[in-house]
Image 1 (cartoon, one colour):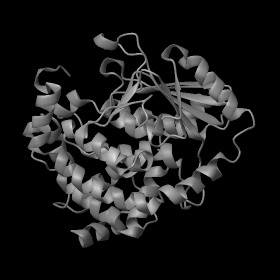
Image 2 (cartoon, one colour; image 1 turned 90 degrees about the vertical axis):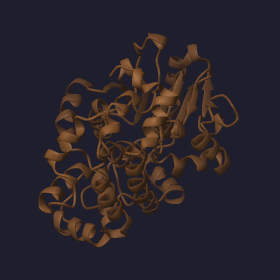
Image 3 (cartoon, one colour; image 1 turned 180 degrees about the vertical axis):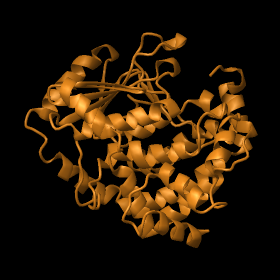
Image 4 (cartoon, one colour; image 1 turned 60 degrees about the vertical axis):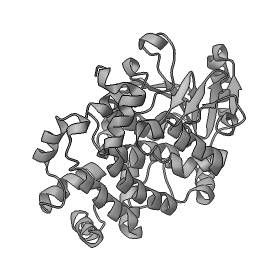
Length: 379
């Protein structure tokens, strides 16, 4: 499988001369090499089924991508391809440059002086991430980074409409577990998210023909955590340059209760809180209050919940007062020691294979029914 995958990748990318995103790569691979990967008709039929009834055809995509990412040359090329701006982001950039505002499904951008504010939006589901938010969020990240009039990016959750938290700002509830249970989230969603959207927050945008560790388009990111950052939203905090949190907010990585791997948290969380606390959070569901000693290892500043807006304004003034000319260089220098691209590539090779197994495991269904009452929730 490894040899076939690498040979196929070389053919599909023209020996590395063509950048393909993982979804396009798998689509073209299925067309060019029938039987190696599930085709469009098979995937369309599978997509209509609830998660418990799926055949697991997408596991082949996990094996294929795992083999590609395991190879230093092909895997690095794929990682760089996923860090390039999306083809449709340029159109949205022009709109944002003209108006200073951009509304997308799952995200809203607004320019405020030297700052771009990205608001994550899925109010009915506590700003959870799913197929409806993925494209919009990544486009928003692309546009925020490419915008030449801003120097800093701020990430917040929108005000939600969910009954229990209606009218409150929530950073985010992680993956949409209702949609996961109902079979509305494909396997490639995880890879597109973590090789694209989340890795762009951490590494910025790649430039054509340039290794991301040599040059990139990037800006500092600040996150403002209100109420909670669960699962994937806690993962996002591990990519941020500065995290400001409300004193009543908390973070969790409920991977055990969900039955999946929490993105790149297994790679990044131990750097923040140490390996023992990381295992407690990932394997045993330990909650980290932002104001606790463990939470403060992730959050840089804790403020009263009612004072979040002025606290963000003070922080923005502090960070932009003298300009952020050296920010990109300092970010690249920090990453060279904490998480080189090759380390990330090797982790993602494991993640691609293991997440495919988890996504179609009967244990996932059992966990969602036991801990989430998924069978009785409406989509």
